[in-house]
Image (cartoon, rainbow, N blue to C red):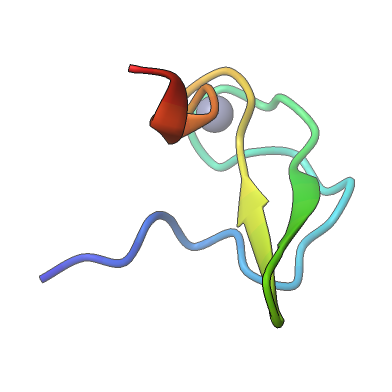
Length: 45
Ligand SMILES: [Zn+2]
């Protein structure tokens, strides 16, 4: 199994895949890091 990406705790650091700055979003009680390029806000689809 693979968690979202290896971007946890890497806010503003370049994505390992595309180099896009990692963004952090806040969910209920959790912080989630994601690459806006590789992982465009899941829930929308
Ligand atoms: Zn990326």
